[in-house]
Image (tube, rainbow, N blue to C red; front, top):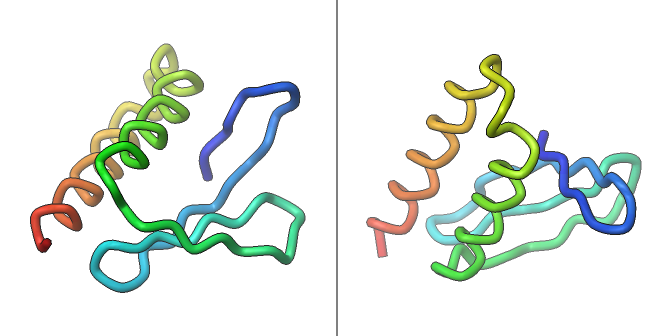
Length: 77
């Protein structure tokens, strides 16, 4: 789960699907957005993660693992 800060706190579930795509589902919503893993989009995901997890030691491993998975998906292009 990723917490995105904007005007309100939104929790997202990220599910990797086919090679370069990811599903984003807002917590409590039935809507699922299919997003292509472009460099810009990966940057946005990383900013969301870093903004919420950067100062919490418990999530450093999860952040590292998610970033590795994103990079692996992009390398398959």
